[in-house]
Length: 98
Image (cartoon, rainbow, N blue to C red; front, side, top):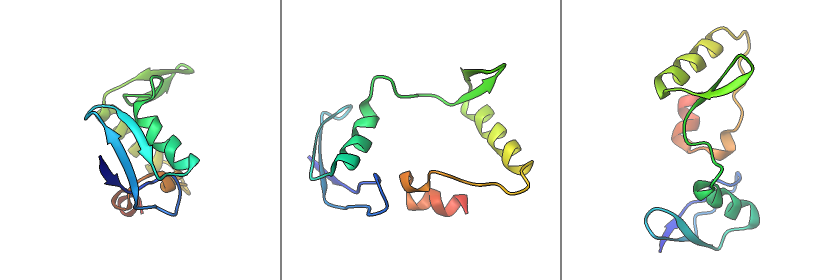
Protein backbone atom coordinates (compact mmCIF):
# COMPACT_ATOMS: atom_id res chain seq x y z
CA UNK A 1 0.00 0.00 0.00
CA UNK A 2 1.21 3.49 -0.87
CA UNK A 3 -0.24 6.97 -0.63
CA UNK A 4 -0.68 8.90 -3.86
CA UNK A 5 -2.12 12.29 -4.78
CA UNK A 6 -5.23 12.09 -6.94
CA UNK A 7 -5.40 14.04 -10.20
CA UNK A 8 -9.08 13.24 -10.79
CA UNK A 9 -10.09 16.89 -10.33
CA UNK A 10 -8.67 20.22 -9.24
CA UNK A 11 -8.79 19.33 -5.51
CA UNK A 12 -5.69 17.10 -5.85
CA UNK A 13 -6.49 15.06 -2.71
CA UNK A 14 -3.25 13.80 -1.18
CA UNK A 15 -4.54 11.06 1.12
CA UNK A 16 -5.44 8.32 -1.35
CA UNK A 17 -4.20 4.81 -0.52
CA UNK A 18 -3.53 2.47 -3.43
CA UNK A 19 -3.03 -1.28 -3.11
CA UNK A 20 -1.11 -2.68 -6.05
CA UNK A 21 0.68 -5.86 -7.05
CA UNK A 22 3.34 -3.70 -8.69
CA UNK A 23 1.77 -3.94 -12.12
CA UNK A 24 -1.97 -3.49 -11.64
CA UNK A 25 -4.01 -1.52 -9.11
CA UNK A 26 -6.01 -3.87 -6.87
CA UNK A 27 -7.82 -1.36 -4.65
CA UNK A 28 -8.16 2.40 -4.18
CA UNK A 29 -9.06 3.62 -0.67
CA UNK A 30 -10.24 7.11 0.22
CA UNK A 31 -10.99 8.40 -3.27
CA UNK A 32 -14.33 9.75 -4.43
CA UNK A 33 -16.02 8.12 -7.44
CA UNK A 34 -14.30 10.49 -9.87
CA UNK A 35 -10.90 9.85 -8.29
CA UNK A 36 -11.40 6.08 -8.23
CA UNK A 37 -12.30 6.15 -11.92
CA UNK A 38 -9.07 8.04 -12.63
CA UNK A 39 -6.99 5.36 -10.90
CA UNK A 40 -8.99 2.56 -12.60
CA UNK A 41 -8.11 3.99 -16.03
CA UNK A 42 -4.49 2.96 -15.49
CA UNK A 43 -5.38 -0.74 -15.59
CA UNK A 44 -8.31 -0.59 -18.03
CA UNK A 45 -8.26 -3.29 -20.72
CA UNK A 46 -9.37 -0.83 -23.43
CA UNK A 47 -6.97 2.01 -22.64
CA UNK A 48 -4.83 3.50 -25.38
CA UNK A 49 -1.21 2.42 -24.83
CA UNK A 50 0.56 4.19 -27.68
CA UNK A 51 0.25 7.56 -29.42
CA UNK A 52 -2.24 7.69 -32.26
CA UNK A 53 -2.59 10.01 -35.25
CA UNK A 54 -5.54 10.33 -37.61
CA UNK A 55 -4.60 9.45 -41.21
CA UNK A 56 -7.20 9.03 -43.95
CA UNK A 57 -9.94 9.44 -41.34
CA UNK A 58 -8.60 6.50 -39.30
CA UNK A 59 -6.60 6.42 -36.06
CA UNK A 60 -3.29 4.58 -36.36
CA UNK A 61 -0.53 3.92 -33.82
CA UNK A 62 2.66 5.93 -34.37
CA UNK A 63 5.97 6.39 -32.56
CA UNK A 64 6.25 8.95 -29.78
CA UNK A 65 8.61 10.98 -31.99
CA UNK A 66 6.06 11.16 -34.82
CA UNK A 67 3.23 12.05 -32.43
CA UNK A 68 5.28 14.82 -30.82
CA UNK A 69 6.32 16.20 -34.22
CA UNK A 70 2.65 16.26 -35.31
CA UNK A 71 1.66 18.02 -32.07
CA UNK A 72 4.36 20.67 -32.54
CA UNK A 73 3.25 21.19 -36.15
CA UNK A 74 -0.40 21.67 -35.15
CA UNK A 75 0.41 24.12 -32.34
CA UNK A 76 2.87 26.13 -34.47
CA UNK A 77 0.30 26.45 -37.27
CA UNK A 78 -2.48 27.58 -34.89
CA UNK A 79 -3.28 31.26 -34.63
CA UNK A 80 -4.68 30.86 -31.11
CA UNK A 81 -3.83 27.41 -29.67
CA UNK A 82 -6.03 26.11 -26.87
CA UNK A 83 -4.63 23.49 -24.50
CA UNK A 84 -7.30 21.37 -22.81
CA UNK A 85 -7.16 18.67 -20.15
CA UNK A 86 -4.81 20.27 -17.64
CA UNK A 87 -6.91 19.07 -14.70
CA UNK A 88 -5.70 15.53 -15.38
CA UNK A 89 -1.95 16.13 -15.58
CA UNK A 90 0.84 16.88 -13.13
CA UNK A 91 1.84 20.39 -12.06
CA UNK A 92 5.14 19.95 -13.94
CA UNK A 93 3.29 19.14 -17.16
CA UNK A 94 0.98 22.14 -16.66
CA UNK A 95 4.00 24.41 -16.23
CA UNK A 96 5.66 23.01 -19.38
CA UNK A 97 2.44 23.52 -21.36
CA UNK A 98 2.26 27.19 -20.48
